Image (cartoon, rainbow, N blue to C red; front, side, top):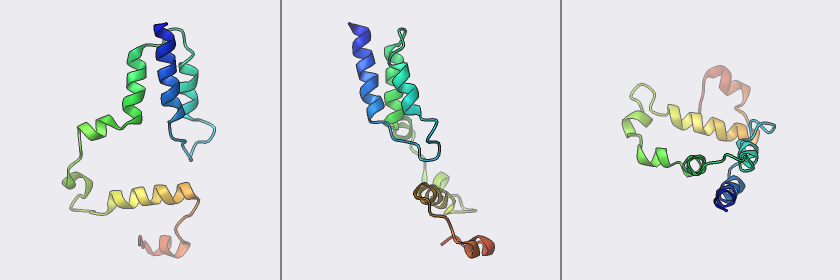
Length: 104
């Protein structure tokens, strides 16, 4: 009975897991789905998956502004996230911006 509750909990976590747009054939969601059927599934594994999904470590150990905006390149991480989101949508930077090194 306890094992089925743990499996159900992991299945509910799996259903709310986001899809990775860059690796459509390798999804963590599928791995967790198969893991929920494993006979030796533990509650610790389910808790770890839940913490990953909820970004608990990021919330517990928040990064300072100094880390997120280093003095040498203050917009580096913003541009990195922006580029990731654009490429997930399928939009890239125009070639002339790449050539001239323009980020805006």
